[in-house]
Length: 203
Image 1 (spheres, rainbow, N blue to C red):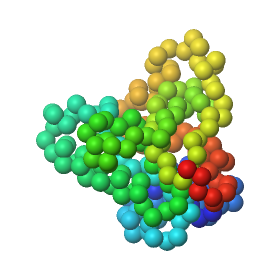
Image 2 (image 1 turned 120 degrees about the vertical axis):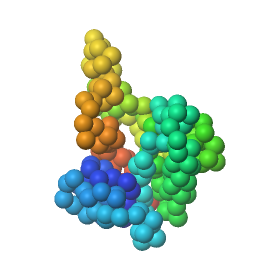
Image 3 (image 1 turned 180 degrees about the vertical axis):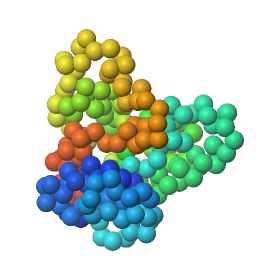
């Protein structure tokens, strides 16, 4: 399969597909953190290159539920949210047979701007081999739900709230946003293993 991983600088999802023999490339305005096939630039420059599958991770700063309060407190946020929602919607409805767009839980204002579409499913890292919470939505077109691979809840018994939510307690720093936005390896592997098979459109 020819696969585009949009808005990814880490190479984590791209490399999970590459390991299974797919023709995968990441794309972001930033350079890739790990050497591999990567287009540094605007994803819309390359959307028409015959992709079979696109997994997109558009910026969530202005769309996610956790940041809705800032719409009323910081000038310019409504305009930035509108631009972010348009970007998200254009990726979701790109002319590609299989699409998954990933984002945290979206607030109602942004959801209205993308046409009222709710996430097809929500997933947690602890469903895929990680002892952490980070509820994430997947908007799917032409793809089945991502199935959990390794339930870690038994291992999380006795952990503190901070330990289970450590991604939200990351230390301040220039790379904090990178750590908070990176796809968990277990989720990346599940995407490659479950969505890297047949080209049939099944949803």
